[in-house]
Image (cartoon, rainbow, N blue to C red; front, side, top):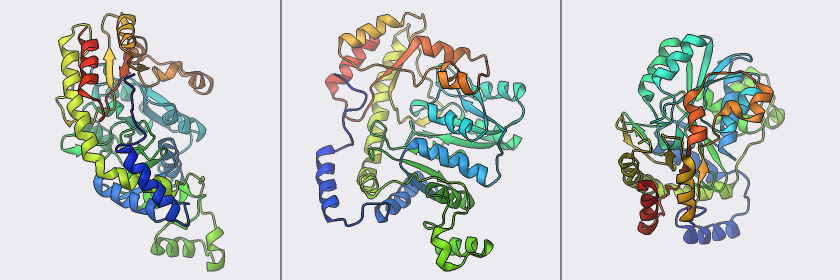
Length: 389
């Protein structure tokens, strides 16, 4: 079978051998030096000042929303614009933390929110205080214009970059356009730590709040200077400081195993991204040659670190393509989670009805198949054969 993801991580055998040695010689495996090293190295590679490592990409979303609430930059009851084509744990923290999600439709040829779709939302719902943008499948629309639109309106922009590590638009890495961005290192994503996630920002105050949110709301992982400041502000004696909780938080910490794997895998970042981009160009050319399918528009992007290969059928005859891929033993998956408005949890807790024609179309007329850095030439040929039908 041509699976969406072949291995737990790149160079798997050697990585597992190194991991076994690390576990045997390391005394403490709870969050420590390897996790801190991964945060620093990831920040450097992503060209962000600060990164907070957590146990999943979903947890990264949760602490980012909680941190913004803790700082008073958003408030319960605020409307949050969010990509309609996204994952459940982009919406769930908004509901759980008392915010109101407002879904935004995407473009069929980029799969992402565009300035045009965002402008329509501003006309319909001018009270939006936060825009939580998902960079879908390694792609974006005109995110530079979206960044400008949000700044002009005083709206905070944050990015879910879990599917787009390494993609570049207008000379900048996706994940660097908003105040902060989240990443996933789940086994099926670009960079794997088995389970894990990251939240990155250039904002020191937000970074310190994220660090506290990750670990119970206490200050143990802050710098000595930040600890001294917060303890003096709250009049906390040194003896009690390790057990003082300053704001709302969780226990979402990773462990040293995750950190060690992350440090090992970071050296493959460029190889992973470049191979995914090369595959994307080959596979997207096949989409362009098939009049039944929608080609992905990417001329506004410098590099597409493609997460998967979308198959969007114009005429609605999706079964023909699903049957063909399955005949050649290719794993097929629905387009993310389809129309989030149709998900049972959304109907139960939000119930807001909106007109989302493009996401609705994608739910019924699209799916995606593999693009990973370990595809062989034979597997690429099979995918091309299925796409060219």
